Length: 187
Ligand SMILES: [Zn+2]
Image 1: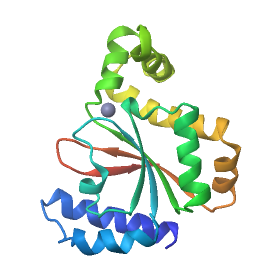
Image 2: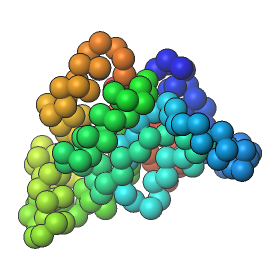
Image 3: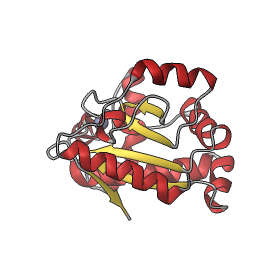
């Protein structure tokens, strides 16, 4: 599957999801099939938010999306390593940063101006640049944050940067709209 086909599959699945439709999946058969190995077609960096479930949103089944899931979609070295695994080893044609409306992590960051303590503070710290750029407006900060995640990948993962530049993987920013179920691809 190439990037265009992969995006087509994701967006067709999302169109079904928006309408409340869902393909029928045979999990018993699929589980057996996947014993031979996984061949996901998209690596998705998503938020931990329990309302954002990529497999439902894109109406796909097991073994199709390789996920990195953290509050606010932020990436540390471990997260970046996981992204590299999806791109470099599983060869997914798509790498998507999937932000979403009403993101609690970004909202908190705008509320506390990026200051926080302990491990949660680390998350705030990483979203802070997006909040500052957006002058702490939550909706703008959500978009800025997705851009920051993209920049973080390109700046800190030479392997992924090269794969993007060589056209081996397409890096896509997309926002999930909680209110409608729709995924909007940005830029
Ligand atoms: Zn979120």
